[in-house]
Amino acid sequence: MTPSIGIGAGERAELWDRLRPGRASDDAELTARVIWSALAEPGDGVAGRLIDDLGAADAIELVYRDEPFASPSALRHEATAVATAVHAAYSVRGLEPPAGVRAGFLRWQPRMSPMFIRSVFAMAAASGTELLVPDDPQWSAGFAGLGDHAPLLLWGLGNVELLAGYGTSAAMVGTRAATGYGTHVATELSAGLAERGWTVVSGGAYGIDAASHRAALATHGNTVAVMAGGLNSFYPIGNSELIARVAREGLVVAEVPFGTPPTPFRFLARNRMIAAMASAVVVVEAGARSGSINTANHASDIGRPIGAVPGPITSPSSVGCHRLLKEGRAEVVEGVDDIIRIAHGEIDEPEPLADPEDPRYGRALSALSTRSARPVAEVAKRSGLGEGETAGLLGVLLLDGRVRKTDAGWVSLPRRA
Image (cartoon, helix red, strand yellow):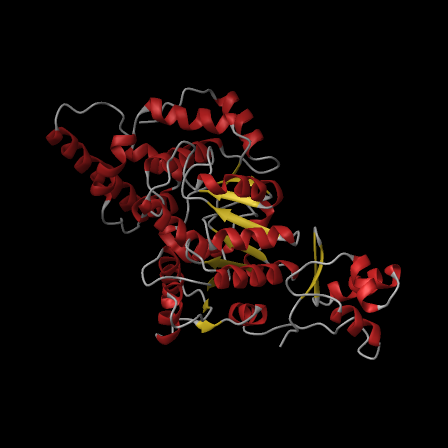
Protein backbone atom coordinates (compact mmCIF):
# COMPACT_ATOMS: atom_id res chain seq x y z
CA MET A 1 0.00 0.00 0.00
CA THR A 2 1.45 3.37 -1.03
CA PRO A 3 1.13 5.91 1.81
CA SER A 4 -0.95 9.00 1.09
CA ILE A 5 0.84 12.22 1.99
CA GLY A 6 -1.69 14.66 0.55
CA ILE A 7 0.56 16.38 -2.01
CA GLY A 8 0.95 15.62 -5.70
CA ALA A 9 4.08 14.80 -7.68
CA GLY A 10 4.50 18.39 -8.89
CA GLU A 11 4.28 19.78 -5.39
CA ARG A 12 6.77 17.20 -4.17
CA ALA A 13 9.19 18.17 -6.94
CA GLU A 14 8.95 21.80 -5.82
CA LEU A 15 9.47 20.68 -2.22
CA TRP A 16 12.64 18.76 -3.09
CA ASP A 17 13.95 21.74 -5.07
CA ARG A 18 13.54 23.84 -1.95
CA LEU A 19 14.83 21.30 0.58
CA ARG A 20 17.64 19.96 -1.59
CA PRO A 21 19.10 22.85 -3.62
CA GLY A 22 21.37 21.55 -6.35
CA ARG A 23 21.10 17.90 -5.27
CA ALA A 24 19.58 14.89 -7.00
CA SER A 25 15.97 14.11 -6.09
CA ASP A 26 14.47 10.63 -6.50
CA ASP A 27 10.88 11.41 -5.55
CA ALA A 28 9.86 7.90 -4.49
CA GLU A 29 12.95 7.28 -2.39
CA LEU A 30 12.93 10.72 -0.75
CA THR A 31 9.23 10.49 0.06
CA ALA A 32 9.72 7.04 1.55
CA ARG A 33 12.73 8.08 3.63
CA VAL A 34 10.83 10.97 5.15
CA ILE A 35 7.96 8.62 5.99
CA TRP A 36 10.38 6.10 7.49
CA SER A 37 11.93 8.84 9.64
CA ALA A 38 8.45 9.52 11.03
CA LEU A 39 7.65 5.85 11.69
CA ALA A 40 10.91 4.54 13.14
CA GLU A 41 12.88 5.86 16.06
CA PRO A 42 16.49 6.91 15.43
CA GLY A 43 18.82 3.97 15.15
CA ASP A 44 16.09 1.38 14.49
CA GLY A 45 18.23 -1.43 13.09
CA VAL A 46 15.35 -3.34 11.48
CA ALA A 47 14.20 -0.29 9.53
CA GLY A 48 17.78 0.48 8.58
CA ARG A 49 18.37 -3.03 7.29
CA LEU A 50 15.15 -3.04 5.23
CA ILE A 51 16.02 0.29 3.62
CA ASP A 52 19.61 -0.75 2.88
CA ASP A 53 18.57 -4.06 1.34
CA LEU A 54 15.31 -3.21 -0.43
CA GLY A 55 15.36 0.56 -0.84
CA ALA A 56 13.20 2.95 1.14
CA ALA A 57 10.30 2.98 -1.34
CA ASP A 58 10.00 -0.81 -1.73
CA ALA A 59 10.38 -1.30 2.01
CA ILE A 60 7.64 1.18 2.90
CA GLU A 61 5.35 -0.42 0.29
CA LEU A 62 5.76 -3.76 2.06
CA VAL A 63 5.12 -2.61 5.63
CA TYR A 64 2.77 0.38 5.49
CA ARG A 65 -0.80 -0.27 6.71
CA ASP A 66 -2.90 2.71 7.75
CA GLU A 67 -6.30 1.02 8.04
CA PRO A 68 -7.76 0.61 11.55
CA PHE A 69 -7.60 -2.87 13.03
CA ALA A 70 -10.70 -4.22 14.74
CA SER A 71 -8.80 -5.90 17.54
CA PRO A 72 -5.32 -6.54 18.91
CA SER A 73 -5.45 -10.02 17.45
CA ALA A 74 -6.19 -8.56 14.00
CA LEU A 75 -3.16 -6.29 14.34
CA ARG A 76 -0.97 -9.21 15.36
CA HIS A 77 -2.26 -11.22 12.41
CA GLU A 78 -1.35 -8.38 10.05
CA ALA A 79 2.11 -8.13 11.62
CA THR A 80 2.66 -11.78 10.74
CA ALA A 81 1.44 -11.13 7.19
CA VAL A 82 3.85 -8.19 6.82
CA ALA A 83 6.76 -10.30 8.05
CA THR A 84 5.83 -13.02 5.56
CA ALA A 85 5.71 -10.49 2.70
CA VAL A 86 9.11 -9.08 3.67
CA HIS A 87 10.65 -12.55 3.84
CA ALA A 88 9.26 -13.32 0.38
CA ALA A 89 10.79 -10.12 -1.02
CA TYR A 90 14.15 -11.10 0.44
CA SER A 91 13.86 -14.61 -0.96
CA VAL A 92 13.28 -13.25 -4.48
CA ARG A 93 16.45 -11.20 -4.14
CA GLY A 94 18.43 -14.11 -2.72
CA LEU A 95 19.03 -12.31 0.56
CA GLU A 96 18.78 -13.39 4.17
CA PRO A 97 15.89 -11.47 5.82
CA PRO A 98 16.45 -9.60 9.07
CA ALA A 99 15.01 -10.83 12.32
CA GLY A 100 12.47 -8.69 14.11
CA VAL A 101 10.30 -7.52 11.20
CA ARG A 102 7.08 -8.53 12.96
CA ALA A 103 8.07 -6.69 16.14
CA GLY A 104 9.19 -3.75 14.02
CA PHE A 105 5.81 -3.48 12.33
CA LEU A 106 4.11 -3.41 15.73
CA ARG A 107 6.41 -0.51 16.70
CA TRP A 108 5.81 1.45 13.50
CA GLN A 109 2.11 0.85 12.96
CA PRO A 110 0.76 3.30 15.61
CA ARG A 111 2.36 6.12 13.58
CA MET A 112 0.95 4.97 10.25
CA SER A 113 -1.56 7.78 10.14
CA PRO A 114 -2.05 9.77 6.92
CA MET A 115 -2.75 12.88 9.00
CA PHE A 116 0.49 12.46 10.93
CA ILE A 117 2.53 11.79 7.78
CA ARG A 118 1.03 14.83 6.05
CA SER A 119 1.88 17.00 9.07
CA VAL A 120 5.54 15.96 8.80
CA PHE A 121 5.65 17.03 5.15
CA ALA A 122 3.73 20.23 5.87
CA MET A 123 6.18 21.29 8.59
CA ALA A 124 9.12 20.42 6.34
CA ALA A 125 7.65 22.51 3.54
CA ALA A 126 7.27 25.50 5.85
CA SER A 127 10.81 25.21 7.21
CA GLY A 128 14.03 26.74 6.00
CA THR A 129 15.97 23.50 6.38
CA GLU A 130 17.87 21.33 3.94
CA LEU A 131 17.27 17.60 3.59
CA LEU A 132 20.24 15.26 3.22
CA VAL A 133 20.34 11.53 2.51
CA PRO A 134 23.24 9.04 2.46
CA ASP A 135 23.83 9.36 -1.31
CA ASP A 136 24.58 13.08 -1.04
CA PRO A 137 28.25 14.18 -1.23
CA GLN A 138 27.78 16.22 1.95
CA TRP A 139 26.86 13.12 3.98
CA SER A 140 29.35 12.34 6.73
CA ALA A 141 31.54 9.34 5.91
CA GLY A 142 31.60 8.59 9.62
CA PHE A 143 27.97 7.44 9.60
CA ALA A 144 29.02 4.29 7.72
CA GLY A 145 30.40 2.98 11.01
CA LEU A 146 26.88 2.77 12.41
CA GLY A 147 25.79 0.15 9.87
CA ASP A 148 22.06 -0.59 10.10
CA HIS A 149 21.77 2.02 12.87
CA ALA A 150 22.92 4.93 10.70
CA PRO A 151 20.53 7.88 10.31
CA LEU A 152 18.05 7.54 7.45
CA LEU A 153 18.27 11.24 6.63
CA LEU A 154 19.25 14.55 8.19
CA TRP A 155 17.49 17.88 8.44
CA GLY A 156 20.01 20.71 8.50
CA LEU A 157 20.01 24.42 9.27
CA GLY A 158 23.18 26.18 8.16
CA ASN A 159 26.21 25.11 6.19
CA VAL A 160 25.60 21.45 5.34
CA GLU A 161 29.04 21.22 3.72
CA LEU A 162 30.47 20.92 7.24
CA LEU A 163 29.18 17.35 7.42
CA ALA A 164 31.65 16.27 4.76
CA GLY A 165 34.65 17.18 6.92
CA TYR A 166 34.70 13.95 8.91
CA GLY A 167 38.50 13.68 8.89
CA THR A 168 38.90 17.03 10.63
CA SER A 169 35.96 16.87 13.04
CA ALA A 170 36.23 16.27 16.77
CA ALA A 171 33.38 15.71 19.20
CA MET A 172 33.66 17.70 22.44
CA VAL A 173 31.31 16.33 25.09
CA GLY A 174 30.87 16.59 28.82
CA THR A 175 28.64 17.23 31.76
CA ARG A 176 25.92 19.85 31.85
CA ALA A 177 27.06 20.76 35.37
CA ALA A 178 30.50 21.86 34.18
CA THR A 179 32.98 23.29 36.64
CA GLY A 180 35.01 26.41 35.96
CA TYR A 181 37.95 24.14 35.17
CA GLY A 182 35.94 22.08 32.67
CA THR A 183 34.52 25.17 30.97
CA HIS A 184 37.99 26.68 30.65
CA VAL A 185 39.48 23.49 29.19
CA ALA A 186 36.58 22.99 26.76
CA THR A 187 36.95 26.59 25.62
CA GLU A 188 40.69 26.33 25.06
CA LEU A 189 40.54 22.97 23.27
CA SER A 190 37.61 23.91 21.04
CA ALA A 191 39.10 27.28 20.14
CA GLY A 192 42.41 25.61 19.32
CA LEU A 193 40.72 23.03 17.10
CA ALA A 194 38.69 25.67 15.31
CA GLU A 195 41.79 27.77 14.69
CA ARG A 196 43.42 24.80 12.97
CA GLY A 197 40.43 24.37 10.68
CA TRP A 198 38.77 21.53 12.58
CA THR A 199 35.02 21.30 13.10
CA VAL A 200 33.82 21.09 16.70
CA VAL A 201 30.84 18.71 17.07
CA SER A 202 28.66 18.71 20.16
CA GLY A 203 25.07 18.47 21.34
CA GLY A 204 24.06 22.04 22.18
CA ALA A 205 23.48 21.22 25.86
CA TYR A 206 24.40 23.30 28.89
CA GLY A 207 27.91 23.08 30.30
CA ILE A 208 30.69 21.57 28.19
CA ASP A 209 28.64 21.45 24.98
CA ALA A 210 27.77 25.13 25.14
CA ALA A 211 31.34 26.16 26.02
CA SER A 212 32.65 24.17 23.04
CA HIS A 213 30.21 25.72 20.56
CA ARG A 214 30.85 29.25 21.89
CA ALA A 215 34.61 28.86 21.64
CA ALA A 216 34.44 27.69 18.03
CA LEU A 217 32.12 30.56 17.12
CA ALA A 218 34.32 33.10 18.91
CA THR A 219 37.25 32.11 16.71
CA HIS A 220 35.07 32.23 13.58
CA GLY A 221 35.58 28.48 13.25
CA ASN A 222 33.28 25.62 12.33
CA THR A 223 30.89 23.91 14.71
CA VAL A 224 27.98 21.48 14.40
CA ALA A 225 25.21 20.99 16.97
CA VAL A 226 23.31 17.70 16.87
CA MET A 227 19.75 17.88 18.20
CA ALA A 228 17.68 15.12 19.81
CA GLY A 229 14.37 16.69 18.74
CA GLY A 230 12.94 18.29 15.63
CA LEU A 231 14.37 21.55 14.32
CA ASN A 232 11.11 23.42 14.78
CA SER A 233 12.42 24.33 18.25
CA PHE A 234 15.80 24.15 19.92
CA TYR A 235 16.50 22.39 23.20
CA PRO A 236 17.48 23.27 25.85
CA ILE A 237 15.44 26.47 25.72
CA GLY A 238 18.11 28.34 27.65
CA ASN A 239 20.57 27.68 24.83
CA SER A 240 18.15 28.46 21.99
CA GLU A 241 19.94 31.73 21.17
CA LEU A 242 23.31 29.96 21.08
CA ILE A 243 21.96 27.14 18.89
CA ALA A 244 20.34 29.68 16.57
CA ARG A 245 23.75 31.32 16.20
CA VAL A 246 25.28 27.92 15.41
CA ALA A 247 22.62 27.54 12.70
CA ARG A 248 23.60 30.93 11.23
CA GLU A 249 27.37 30.48 11.40
CA GLY A 250 27.81 26.70 11.50
CA LEU A 251 25.31 23.86 11.26
CA VAL A 252 22.50 22.38 13.34
CA VAL A 253 21.22 18.91 12.38
CA ALA A 254 18.56 16.43 13.46
CA GLU A 255 17.44 13.06 12.13
CA VAL A 256 13.91 13.23 13.55
CA PRO A 257 11.05 15.09 11.85
CA PHE A 258 9.74 18.50 12.82
CA GLY A 259 7.48 18.40 15.84
CA THR A 260 9.37 15.49 17.43
CA PRO A 261 10.11 16.30 21.09
CA PRO A 262 13.49 15.51 22.64
CA THR A 263 13.20 12.61 25.08
CA PRO A 264 15.76 10.73 27.20
CA PHE A 265 15.98 7.82 24.75
CA ARG A 266 16.33 10.19 21.80
CA PHE A 267 19.23 11.91 23.52
CA LEU A 268 20.93 8.54 23.87
CA ALA A 269 20.28 7.80 20.18
CA ARG A 270 21.57 11.28 19.28
CA ASN A 271 24.85 10.48 21.02
CA ARG A 272 25.64 7.72 18.53
CA MET A 273 25.56 10.35 15.75
CA ILE A 274 27.92 12.66 17.64
CA ALA A 275 30.34 9.77 18.09
CA ALA A 276 30.10 8.67 14.45
CA MET A 277 30.47 12.00 12.68
CA ALA A 278 33.75 12.91 14.40
CA SER A 279 37.17 11.36 13.89
CA ALA A 280 37.75 11.48 17.67
CA VAL A 281 35.57 11.91 20.75
CA VAL A 282 36.90 14.00 23.64
CA VAL A 283 35.26 13.77 27.07
CA VAL A 284 36.16 16.94 28.96
CA GLU A 285 34.21 16.33 32.17
CA ALA A 286 31.79 13.53 33.02
CA GLY A 287 30.22 12.05 36.11
CA ALA A 288 30.14 8.32 36.75
CA ARG A 289 26.81 8.07 34.91
CA SER A 290 26.29 10.59 32.14
CA GLY A 291 25.33 11.07 28.54
CA SER A 292 28.97 11.79 27.78
CA ILE A 293 29.94 8.29 28.87
CA ASN A 294 27.14 6.99 26.65
CA THR A 295 28.71 8.88 23.74
CA ALA A 296 32.08 7.33 24.61
CA ASN A 297 30.46 3.89 24.67
CA HIS A 298 29.08 4.48 21.17
CA ALA A 299 32.54 5.59 20.07
CA SER A 300 34.03 2.36 21.46
CA ASP A 301 31.41 0.29 19.66
CA ILE A 302 32.33 1.73 16.26
CA GLY A 303 36.08 1.92 16.85
CA ARG A 304 36.28 5.69 17.16
CA PRO A 305 39.28 6.89 19.25
CA ILE A 306 38.48 8.52 22.60
CA GLY A 307 40.34 11.15 24.56
CA ALA A 308 39.62 12.19 28.14
CA VAL A 309 40.73 15.25 30.08
CA PRO A 310 42.01 14.41 33.58
CA GLY A 311 40.69 16.55 36.41
CA PRO A 312 41.00 16.88 40.17
CA ILE A 313 40.59 13.53 41.93
CA THR A 314 38.20 15.28 44.32
CA SER A 315 35.84 16.39 41.55
CA PRO A 316 32.72 14.26 40.86
CA SER A 317 32.68 15.85 37.40
CA SER A 318 35.91 14.08 36.49
CA VAL A 319 35.04 10.59 37.77
CA GLY A 320 33.87 9.44 34.34
CA CYS A 321 37.01 10.73 32.61
CA HIS A 322 39.27 9.01 35.11
CA ARG A 323 37.37 5.76 34.72
CA LEU A 324 37.80 5.86 30.94
CA LEU A 325 41.51 6.43 31.41
CA LYS A 326 41.94 3.70 34.04
CA GLU A 327 40.08 1.19 31.89
CA GLY A 328 42.37 1.98 28.97
CA ARG A 329 39.45 3.10 26.80
CA ALA A 330 40.71 6.66 26.40
CA GLU A 331 43.99 8.52 26.05
CA VAL A 332 44.96 11.55 28.09
CA VAL A 333 44.15 14.89 26.48
CA GLU A 334 46.20 17.86 27.66
CA GLY A 335 46.00 19.98 24.52
CA VAL A 336 44.90 20.24 20.92
CA ASP A 337 47.91 18.30 19.68
CA ASP A 338 46.75 15.31 21.72
CA ILE A 339 43.34 15.37 20.04
CA ILE A 340 44.85 15.49 16.55
CA ARG A 341 47.28 12.72 17.43
CA ILE A 342 44.47 10.56 18.81
CA ALA A 343 42.39 11.16 15.69
CA HIS A 344 45.10 10.80 13.06
CA GLY A 345 48.02 9.20 14.83
CA GLU A 346 50.33 12.07 13.92
CA ILE A 347 50.60 15.85 13.83
CA ASP A 348 51.57 17.75 10.72
CA GLU A 349 53.25 20.76 12.33
CA PRO A 350 54.11 23.51 9.83
CA GLU A 351 57.23 25.63 10.08
CA PRO A 352 56.54 28.81 12.08
CA LEU A 353 56.26 32.05 10.12
CA ALA A 354 57.52 34.20 12.97
CA ASP A 355 61.29 34.67 12.79
CA PRO A 356 62.70 33.17 16.02
CA GLU A 357 65.61 35.61 15.78
CA ASP A 358 63.30 38.64 15.76
CA PRO A 359 62.84 39.81 19.39
CA ARG A 360 59.77 41.85 18.51
CA TYR A 361 57.62 38.71 18.41
CA GLY A 362 58.63 37.87 21.96
CA ARG A 363 57.83 41.41 23.09
CA ALA A 364 54.38 41.25 21.49
CA LEU A 365 53.69 37.89 23.12
CA SER A 366 54.84 39.05 26.55
CA ALA A 367 52.41 41.97 26.30
CA LEU A 368 49.47 39.59 25.93
CA SER A 369 47.45 37.64 28.49
CA THR A 370 46.03 34.14 28.15
CA ARG A 371 42.82 35.24 29.90
CA SER A 372 42.15 38.92 29.23
CA ALA A 373 41.82 40.12 25.64
CA ARG A 374 43.80 43.27 24.83
CA PRO A 375 43.35 45.60 21.86
CA VAL A 376 46.25 46.33 19.52
CA ALA A 377 46.78 49.76 21.08
CA GLU A 378 47.21 48.24 24.53
CA VAL A 379 49.58 45.57 23.24
CA ALA A 380 51.64 48.23 21.48
CA LYS A 381 51.80 50.34 24.63
CA ARG A 382 52.91 47.38 26.79
CA SER A 383 55.51 46.18 24.27
CA GLY A 384 56.91 49.56 23.30
CA LEU A 385 56.17 49.00 19.62
CA GLY A 386 54.14 51.02 17.11
CA GLU A 387 50.51 50.10 16.57
CA GLY A 388 50.95 49.26 12.88
CA GLU A 389 54.05 47.23 13.64
CA THR A 390 52.22 45.42 16.46
CA ALA A 391 49.25 44.61 14.24
CA GLY A 392 51.57 43.03 11.68
CA LEU A 393 53.37 40.96 14.30
CA LEU A 394 50.10 39.73 15.76
CA GLY A 395 48.89 38.73 12.28
CA VAL A 396 51.93 36.48 11.82
CA LEU A 397 51.55 35.03 15.32
CA LEU A 398 47.91 34.32 14.54
CA LEU A 399 48.92 32.23 11.52
CA ASP A 400 51.40 30.39 13.73
CA GLY A 401 48.70 29.55 16.25
CA ARG A 402 50.42 31.50 19.04
CA VAL A 403 47.63 34.05 19.54
CA ARG A 404 43.89 34.29 19.09
CA LYS A 405 41.79 37.27 17.99
CA THR A 406 38.47 37.84 19.74
CA ASP A 407 35.87 40.58 19.49
CA ALA A 408 37.51 42.25 22.51
CA GLY A 409 41.10 42.00 21.30
CA TRP A 410 44.02 39.56 21.36
CA VAL A 411 45.00 36.76 23.75
CA SER A 412 48.05 34.49 23.75
CA LEU A 413 47.88 30.72 23.49
CA PRO A 414 50.11 28.11 25.13
CA ARG A 415 53.05 27.01 23.02
CA ARG A 416 52.41 23.72 21.26
CA ALA A 417 54.34 20.78 22.57
